[in-house]
Image (tube, rainbow, N blue to C red; front, top):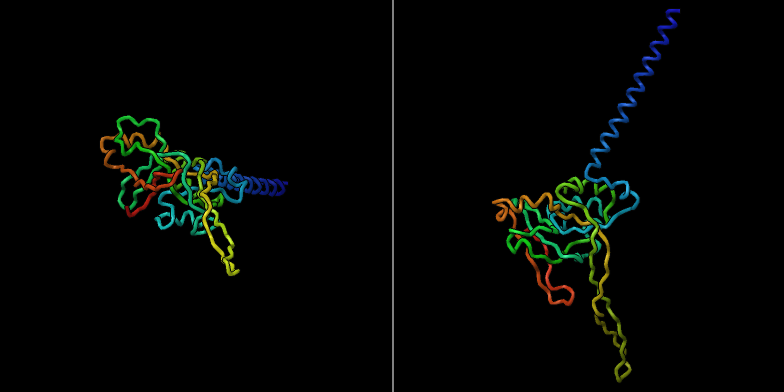
Length: 237
């Protein structure tokens, strides 16, 4: 009888150890998942789509040092689907960190005591990618989404121009094909964009040395009715 009880006790202990191991494994999965989605609390929503549009205007754009992060999860790979401009105007500053300098799009409410060059606003030109949901986990971590930056849906305007084809016939009956450009039209899409959180960057901008740590990104000018001035980031400038 004692041997039977001993066997039962061993079986119960082994079963308890197995259940504890399973419980620990589940807790580890939950913990890892919380860490993985720390900066992507809306991941459950992202997963409901094959991809989501991302507007890239900074050091993750083509030829920039962190473009591989976007390229790996982009449906179009290295090349963007299109180029566009923010419908809204932003401040656009570069945090000077040598080779690690980064441009920061800001929508500042408090502009007091800042130099004019840091408070001027304009549209921002960038690239549009369709990015797979899992990639946002890496991008959000890189940008410290919710801490340093906020991944925000914004309206992006994409200029398009149709090519018209005309067939004309001369006096000798010969036919010629001529091409002309139609009036420029605008297509608007909604895409995610990383915008600097004012709560995080304001103290740095207002710091005593802040004026020297941040410089305005170059503003480009064009003679187009809807687009006169816009920011375009280039690492070499």
